[in-house]
Amino acid sequence: LLRSDGACPPSAAALAASRYSTFIAGVVVAAADGEALELINSDADVDGMNIVATMIPHETGEAIHSEIVASDQGSTTLVLNWAPINGAFLSIGADNRLMEVGWEKIPIMKHLSYAASFLEFKMKDEEYLAKFVGLNIPVFQNDVMQEKAIVKVKLPYDRNEIEKLGFNKLELDFALGCDGTLDSDCSVWDHVISLTLLGCSDSMLGNEPGGDPSELGRWITTFRRRVGRWRTDATSLFPMIWGQENNEGGERTCSFQIQTESEPWRSTLNLLLSRDDEKDGAFPTRVEEVVYPNTQVNFDSRLYNENRTYTFSVDSDTTKRVTLRALITGHGNCEFLPTSHWWSLNGGDKSYDSSDVQYDNYMEAGMDFGCADRSHEGAVPNEHGTWYYGRNGWCDGMQVEPLEFDITKDIMEGENVLEYGAFSYDVGGGGKSVEGCGGYMLMSTKLIFT
Image (cartoon, rainbow, N blue to C red):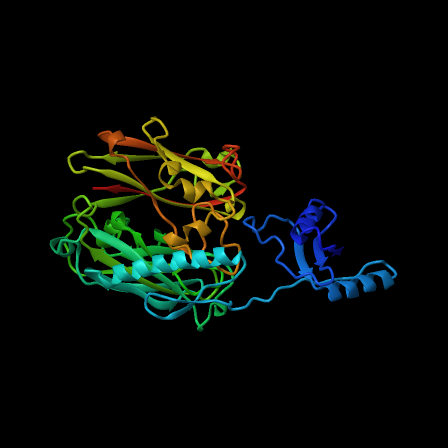
């Protein structure tokens, strides 16, 4: 218990005490007589102290002090708790509907600015969907995915018919929701959501329903917020669903699975097919799933990087371009530590590096506002948890962006060898190492041929 003298700022007094956190678990600052209460540690370093700290009125502090003096042990027990509330602010979206702006954990102006950034992202997405011209194929429609949900979808057109319609772009339009009407009705924990293709007639990967799943997309649930809708470009994965070039056509039925932990989130997913004049040519012709001899997921030693090669063949007469696509996220002890991921072809340089295309997404893991600063990209703000910290390849309440590289220039006729490796770092980017970050990496990799 610190009794304020009215001169030393309460936050400064608590911060000084926190330096002795080996012996002190928490600090209660009692205001001086007539001194106003203030937020402890309400600056930009939102979690700068590694102890619990709060400020209480003068009269309450004097009562606690008297209890301590009167006790035989010279101490008393205080229980610090917090009660989640729905929030003191509401927003009005572009659709003129009221919406919560989330948990007020961080300083108020930051809280509101991140909410505004997300609302602008949401408005642009809604405008895109309102003007969308193309084919919308519903897959999941507000389905509960408590652990998983599986649906069979009859596709309205085959590959040849889709190409005749002039489409050359495929997007995954995914929305997350929960039962009830308020954020507080949603699950409190963040978990990975994975969309997999269980099988299609004439599927390029040869999977049948009930076989090994092939990942199409990945998202992360929010900490108890019921908003979130994201579009992911999945053009390169088109052959997984609609088959290879010049297939015989006919009716196609695909089985899709969406999976998360046991909490009852609701999922809505549409496949959007459209024409994008900025895209080069038609859809890819085939997809090849990359499986390394070493399938270890734990990045806790240099063993993670051993035997990460994959051999594949290319026929230059039928292949004009080869693209590498990977979904990679770090979890467990790797969640808040940066990593980088590289690939090389045929013994060449580590030419294809995650830091070249998504530096912030991996290297800002553990930074105080690494994910908060991505609210304008669709990261749901003001969640009921540590949503603001940067993560290793992902953010709470957001899609996982795939890494894509055009590797055509390093391709040889016939047999090619792809090699993969990863580095780990300390928060901030120092301490580059192959020894790992102590947790595990979730990775799916594919080669796309056009």
